[in-house]
Image (tube, rainbow, N blue to C red):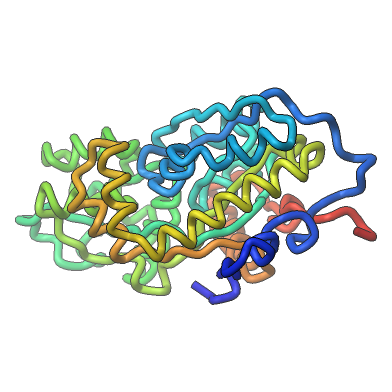
Length: 326
């Protein structure tokens, strides 16, 4: 991913680049409200970074000084259900791949892009003894992925590299847990999924990769999404939360073995799978740039043209920005 994502984190003062003024995201004092008693953060079991943030209690400590009594962590299996909760006001912040925000915006959810980070690596997987040798061989076959997840976009992009469309396969919309069972049971021909599920399938089941996001044609970003009202009313809390996540993101990239051990302890997923996932991961973090917006807009336009989402959207409309004059 572009180096412009990276945070300058050498000193405490430099760390404030993610906060208030440097982010350019703090509205006037008149727009800010009294802090809530609790801030609610959604996470996925596969999101080791947020598991580390939770374990270290860095957000709790930071927000306590700003008047927040507690931080509630709410687990989701993958992105679309998390953004449903975010749009409904059940949580205030969550991290997802590139596709869930497009579906959420098209559905009218009240949320905003708050920060960007490289996506976990994804792959198109087939069983080790499968006759499928390339993406082109998927024509007419059952391919599983989470509907509205980042794997949905990777599927569309991967098929396009072979001149195929979704109509050329039989999509099977499954969560990672259900797809694991279907993959091992021989009920699907291929599975598109992200790390650590990608690594688990390789390590435990001998899954074979026919395409992955090391191919830059398939690559994307992930995003921290915030509730629109929370972002508008609590910019200082949101900036502080992102600041702490940013610091641990950079630390994680420098301590991959330690992160793998922590993730294995927290999730029960073996350390070999986590080590494989982190060995190919990118660790950087920063504001949502014009390049991100353009990438997301291209995704949205493609999905609208294919009839996957019902209407045209403007991604720039829901990127968190400072009010005019700030």
